[in-house]
Length: 121
Image (tube, rainbow, N blue to C red; front, side, top):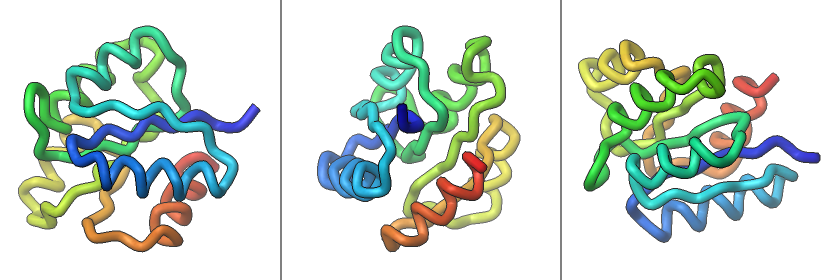
């Protein structure tokens, strides 16, 4: 079975692009519309990696990372932020919360796959 990656973004078009790119490269995808939805899905499905947006309604990416890191099953899985934010302060906040990496939008599909392969090993 392929690796399962959760993509969390309030933009349907971004979710579709990420899902399509991952599926084309043999990954299974779980989609969530925001951090709250992501955390609910994490409690019922095992994922190998999370790719999350930063700015979302209900629960943002930082909140999702903190929530995921509190779950025993998600303590050590890679979490990559995929966001338009590129300030070092935001990156530091993401890293402090437990983010593994950072991709700035707009991104190229090859760039996403390179990062996924790197963090999933």
